[in-house]
Image 1 (spheres, rainbow, N blue to C red):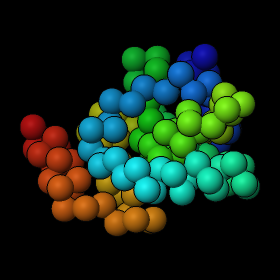
Image 2 (image 1 turned 120 degrees about the vertical axis):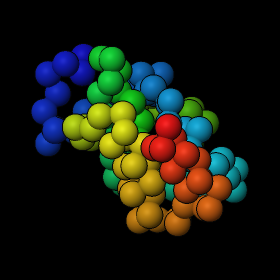
Image 3 (image 1 turned 60 degrees about the horizontal axis):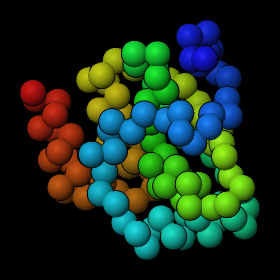
Image 4 (image 1 turned 90 degrees about the horizontal axis):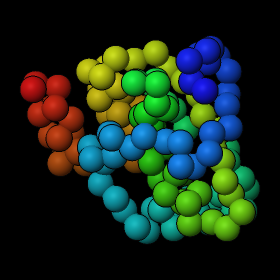
Length: 119
């Protein structure tokens, strides 16, 4: 599935296909997830989630709210995803960098990522 996936190609991936190992570096904000669900319901997916491929799995790097929101909506079984080439260390840094665009990561999220990179 992910073996021959060019970086510039968007793919619709089933919601259950996402590996969420980096979710632990993001705080869950139920209010923001409800707002995202409302946006997905009303407008559809406006931007792809970002994944990297590790151990032949699509590992989510950016789009945790979109994934949670999509799972709460009836009839939405896939999300468009864009693949980026990242090793584990770079993926952790990307979780931070890609999330600086919207809501700024909270200090606790920054600390989790820095701690993971130092290890």
